[in-house]
Image 1 (cartoon, rainbow over the protein chains, first blue to last red):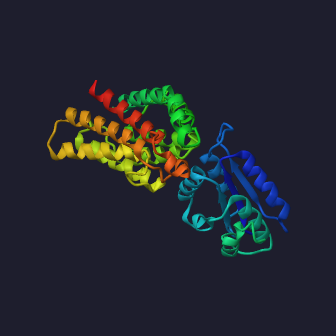
Image 2 (cartoon, chains in turn brown, orange):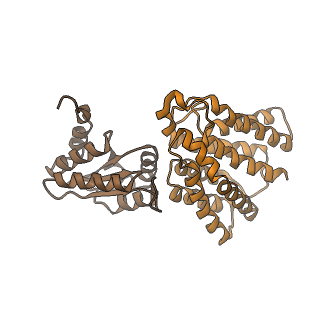
Image 3 (cartoon, rainbow over the protein chains, first blue to last red):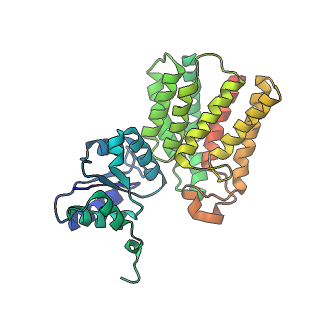
Length: 132
Length: 206
């Protein structure tokens, strides 16, 4: 199963997004979060991102949803520190964090592979609100 | 030599911590208002680590500095400055630094920041202080200036670079969300870079 990591500047956004995504999953998918700084402020905790990525099972891949600047920058840096086999199985999605995480939870729990999950959440229609 | 450099980093930490409010005010005008808070968090942690340690080499000191900033700053300036110091750690020797060494250090810092931030000169970032500073050092080398005047010119170029960010429009980072409204404010990253460079240079010239 593809697993999911949610990285946000805000602990509340990360945990709230996880809560929404958990609600939609059809089978067991590991959804982890890295929200806020190491002293509970808004920002990014590089060590926490590293810890989560090392701990998570990436055999079928990990989809990463990240919000703003340093969340993306810190993730990319941490990814470079991992063994190359692991790096290849971890993909940052070009998707909005909430919609991306919710749809990724559905797709991953339906047994889709890493490329399929990414393709689903990177579709432009994911952000369509007016023509639902 | 490494412990002299340690003193320099302790001084730099004090300067950053002292300017926490100022950097945060600059950032509040065009960003998320945390640059000073973030850097002070990282440099406070660094201070604690440096005070309790002795270093065999500058490489070791710079590596610890890089990793401490990366782990504790909490904003993009952590990976940006962290990667700059990590790059510098790979080239810095334990002998007295000459102008060629300083140019190499500046180029490594720029390469590290660009690797993470993908910014170029003129985008209202820390690079708008560091690139002019590096260019000034190269000009001094080409003019065969002595080290002292090279450093004085470098300090001046860094300050002009920092001030030039006032008129720039941000196209990178959170300030880019403000578009044209980012014009008219000095960039906080360019300012923290100037504070570091000026501490390094003033300490050397003293």
